[in-house]
Image 1 (cartoon, rainbow, N blue to C red):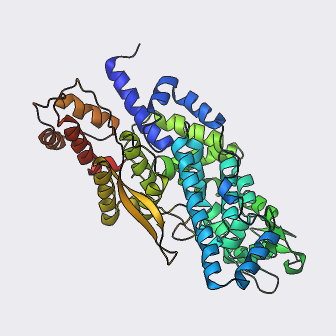
Image 2 (image 1 turned 120 degrees about the horizontal axis):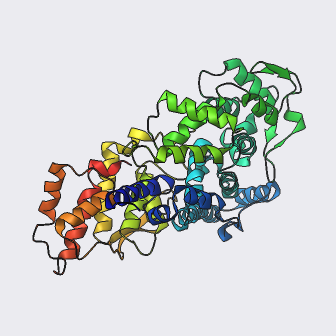
Image 3 (image 1 turned 45 degrees about the vertical axis):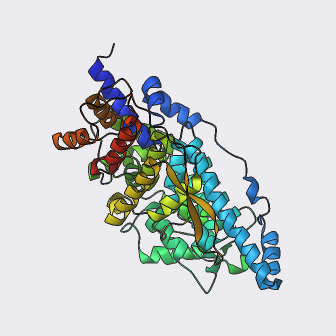
Length: 472
């Protein structure tokens, strides 16, 4: 039987790993009651959404449908063109809402957390791709393969229409090579800088030449292919997309680049070289299967004292507030707006490298936006979507009241409430901070008084704006 101290420790670990394996402390009780291993098993087995959203039904799905839409736009007057463009932008907004709702609703959110990870690894933005159905396809492949084989996922992703369009492989053809996809396949998707040569990029572009848009996936077009032997990462032959991925995954440094990024995504902003090598070697031994790698990382890191090793990304920060405050109803576009202000615009990363993460999440501007969001939510208000402006580039929002309910023990003393918050919100309670918090919620605090709820919200708001709350 656990002592009271041990129970508090395991509960704190549950709060910490609820944030790490999801985006709030909502799953803390599940982790506490079932144990980490059981929670992970449930996460891997949990059902997920496989159905296409209704709003995509009128979007072009095939090249023939896309061609017809383009022709219609070409022949339309300005008013009709604007209406069609507005519909495309609205559907992109709907796609964000759809995904954020999946994230929020998930009882076991690890799969969706991995989808966001892969989304930021295999970057392909809606802003450039423009075809919403292709972005959805890309997103769904990440979801279906979130815990699968890294090599298989790489093969599938570089043959999506979204990736072929985003990295300009539609312009990669015999006699007029475009090296973008070939370069990023090595630099950002698999090996990382220093593990290949410029000649490998040029030769890889030849293997990818002619890989063009298709109906369900990208397909080679014979007249644009390069039909010659190439030498790629030391091997010579007639290679295409799958072949060069196979060769990449034979390289000695292949497991470490992605292992480092996974460690950064979940636990450490700056993992050391030893831990990267340790888990990377294991990843190779598992033939690049993601699920066993995650199990090993999470179960071994769970027992370590590694809290405070990572700055919260904007999605974790805002979802934790929404969950703690029991915000009703959930407003996905409010979240989308906050994320964009914070530099984490879903579906539209700033460049092919994706969100940098780490310290970039806590610039003075980002910190200010976090404080504003906390002030607004703690006052029972929210910024909600109103519509698109006439220029079709900017979105209109309005401030509306929302229902919030912060759970706290109405029989506890001021000191006990502060201690509980510090445990649940995972921050170190220094003597200086203890004194500051006591000034907000006085020693003679009366839970039955009319101002009690206001005092508790003021306390919570203060904590969320502290430096300690920004880390996990």
